[in-house]
Length: 124
Length: 124
DNA sequence: GGTTTTAGTTAGCAAGGCTAATGAACTATG
DNA sequence: CATAGTTCATTAGCCTTGCTAACTAAAACC
Image (cartoon, rainbow over all chains, first blue to last red; front, side):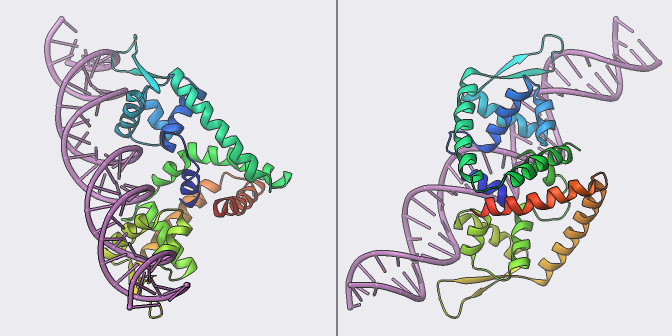
C-alpha cells in the first residue's frame, strides 16, 4: 500500500494510475474485451466498465462491436491514448534514472528478477 | 496496480487493506500522531483523519491528547485492533505458505532483498 | 500582545472498488 | 425450432479513499 501511494505522488499527467495501467495493458497486449481487461487487472467487470467510460469520454480509447459475437466489445487504444502514454513513460524514465542511480548493478538485477516472480504470483 | 488489486482479493476480514496497513504501522512503530502516520503512508493528513475515524468508530484504535502539545493527538492500536491484525496475519501466512511453496530458495531470497530495496525507494 | 506557523479536522469533489440487477446475444436441449 | 439457460456488458447504488480549500485551536515567534 505504501509503495502504491508513493508512486501515485509521481503522477503528473491528466490520467490516474488506474487509467494509465489499463492504457498500458491495451498498448502491450492489443485490443481486448472489457471482461478480459477486468480479469487481467483483477477487478470486477463493472469496475472496468466505469474506467473504460472515463477513458472513452476523454478520447483515450475506442469501443467497437465484435462482428462475430454481438455481446462482446473490443476496446482499442486511440492515438491520443498512445501520446499520453508515451509522455508518461518519458516522465517515468526520468524518475527511474534519478532514483536508480543510487542502486548497484546487483540491486537492479534483484528488482528485475523480483518483478518476474511477482508477475507470476499476481497472475496465479 | 495489478499486484495491489491481486492482494485486495485475498482480504477476508472486515477491514480494508488501507485500514490494515495503518493498523500494522501502529503495531510495528508504536503510537503515532495522525500527521506522522499520514507521512509514513504517503497520504495527505485529511485522508488519514478519515481512515482513523473509521478505525476509531469501530474500536480498532484509540485517540489520546498529547499532554505536552495541545495540538497533537496520539493514536494507539486497541486490543480489538491487535486481535483483528493477528487474525489477518494468520490468514496471510496461510496464503504465503501456499503460494511460496512453488518458489525456490533463491527466488524467496530475491523477494526478500527486493522488499528492502523497495522500502528504501518508497521512503525516498 | 499580536502575528505567524503548525496540527488536526471539516467540507466537498472525484475516482474506483464492490454487489445486485438488467438487457441483449449466444448456446444448448427437448 | 422454441424455450431455457448462460454469458457479456452495462446500469444503479453503496462505500472507501484520494485530493484541495477552509477552519479552529494551540504553539511559537517577534
